[in-house]
Amino acid sequence: MFTKIRFTIANHTQPSGEKVLVPRLKSGSIEEFMDRYDAEGSPFRQGVMVGALYTMRDKLLDMMSDGSAIHLPGFGTFTLTLGGRVEVQNGSYVGRDVHVDGIRFTPDERLLDALRRLKVDQDPLPVRPYVDEQDLDAALADLFARQDTISRRDLSYALGSTLSLHRLSDLLNRLVAEGRLRREGTGSQTRYRKA
Image (cartoon, rainbow, N blue to C red; front, side, top):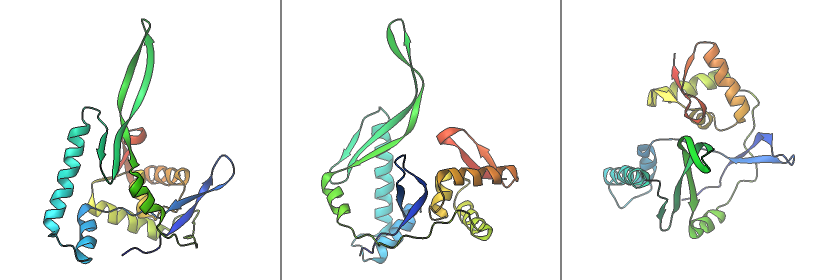
């Protein structure tokens, strides 16, 4: 069932000077995930499992809407992360422009133990300091065939996570300057639309 995990060595380094190891990331829809699950002889019908996953996602969102951390036994804990700033007003702390910035997942110890036993291929995937234009065009075409807007992370996954965040940002800025993409939003909420 499991194959060796592939990884790459990021173009950036830690403050200590050590190179950063990055697992190869894949993105895809729940349906694509279930296609693989179904091909491996699932005892459940694919439609039932897809529906269950979407329902679980919606329930997680609903339960987290009041800021609660959600613990799923055997999986882990999902916690919202917040952005914004804190000010002192009349001797009390007050939040300003507070918004949901992301989500943090802390795996259960049993899941973490199982993950730590997975084998990792010791030969890294090649790191490319640039992206071939044909590969870029193919990645963009594939992404925009599935969705109206993309994030920096979407493009990183589509390119096999072979670029550092800095080089990826430079690439997206170039595509915007060339008129191939249109930027929407700011900060972590930035999305890119086909121009």
